[in-house]
Length: 121
Image (cartoon, rainbow, N blue to C red; front, top):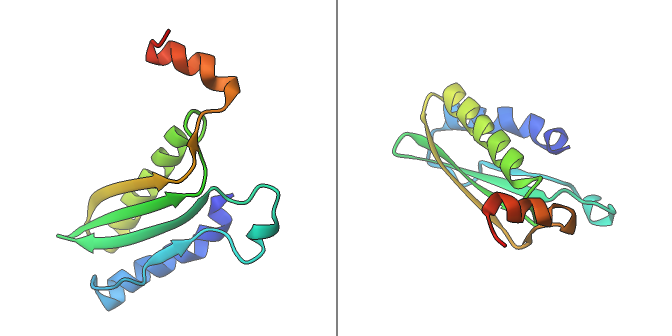
C-alpha cells in the first residue's frame, strides 16, 4: 500500500515545515523504493510534492499509471484527506491539489458502466 512508503515521510514533512519554515523545495514524499522496479505491479502513485504558499499547503501528485474508474476517485479523496490533515498539523490552510499521470486509463471491465454513467451511447 502507499501508506507503507508514506507513513514516516508524513511526519517528517510536517516537522520540516513547522521547525524550518515554509521556504523549502525538499518536502517531497516518494512512493516506492529501489526494489519497486522489479515488482510485477509497482506502485502507481510515485510521489507527492508539497508547497506552502500564501499560508496554504498544496500537493502536486504524480501517478505513473492511474485507473480512471476504480483508482482516480478514491485516490484523490484519500490524498485530499491527507493534505487536510497535514495542513492542520502544520497550522496552515488547505491549498490546491494538482494531479497528473502519464497513464490515465479505463479498463475494459468498467467501460460499459462508465458509458452509462457519462450517458455516452
